[in-house]
Amino acid sequence: MSVTKSSKRWLFLAATLCGLGAEPIKAFSQSQDSLMPYAMLRSLQFVQDSVAMGDHSATEMQRFLLQTIDERLKSAPSAIFKDPRNVDAALVYAMSGGNPATLELLVARDVDGNFDSRVADILRKYLSGKGTLVAQSIAAMVPEYRGTRIGAYLALIGGNVTIPRDPLAALGFYDIARLEAPGTIVEEAALRRSLAIAVEDGDAARGVDYAQRYARRFLHSPYASQFADLLVSLVIKRADSIGEETIQETFAMMDTERQKEAYLRLSRLAAISGKDGLARMAALKAKALSPALPDQPEVQANLYESLSNIGTPDVVSAIETIVQIPEGQLSDRDRALRDAARAIAEQVVRPPSLQPGQPGAEVGAATTQQDARQNPSSNGTAGTEEKSIWRVETHKADDEGEDVRQLVTSGRSKLDEIDSLLKKGEGAP
Image (cartoon, rainbow, N blue to C red):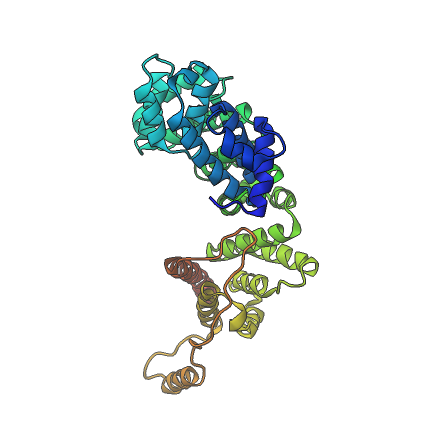
């Protein structure tokens, strides 16, 4: 592996943790055979925790350390595993993105019984994609290993394998993992997965607690985009239980740029889901943050706010805003939304259609056809790709279609409500 400038910095820090002095590159190359695995693992944990806290320059160093530890474990004499710290280092390495085959090799060589065969068997199945087979076994072992060097990692795995059959029980394992390893990549993963459970199966208060803890500690993690999506989903599904004040309090824990992006995500999904009040609130909050971000236009917020106004007395104003939004400033998926929203809004304000044979019916049909010829949809304009502070810049075409389908369904519901009100008005004395 070539050593870049950022790698040298991290190599120096990692070497310092291992006690290798001030020439880390030379020391690592010369001392790999003499370094104890537990000392090398300490460096890996430090680097991984730094990545979780938002230092993405440490990612390259993480790959280097995983490779270096792998080579060290494979070449290590069996005698060094009489030290339990080295046994635990091998287990944690395997649970931290290491090579499962290396752990398999070490266990096969272990004639002295230094490795707990129960843990080795659990990891063998889990790392091969058969974790559900050991759910009961690991549930019994997590209490036994609490307070040990591998306890937090086992608890995290316990939560992962328990989710399919009992998501709420998985929360208990994630709580243990967080308590055993605060401020680490283990806590980051446990919080994020706990929030995912709260979105689907947990209560709103618990979900907000997870979200706020994550926002305070891991907002710059490489996985923070998943957190943002989960937070938005939680608010969409449980907005009534959470309340607008708590929503804004949680979003305020983010920096301005991330806060605006999160509000835009919330406004978009709320508008698509037919939660107009929530969509409007989020769009207005995003617009309020725009003066602090002059390089970011308000077109998305304007679009989503207009979507939320389709079923209100402001529908005419919404149409005007939607029509005026430049296509070139919208992503492909937002252009599709804009076109669908415009069609729905025009149906809302269109006069009742005349039955064939009634005066004016043919004139109306001809006018509609003429309008269609004069206002063809623009298919050749290239849209602006979305750039996200959360590091998510691509979206599947299927997602665009699903967004439009949801919006159309919501729009039809609005039209049905309007028709129902009109019928009641016609029947009134």
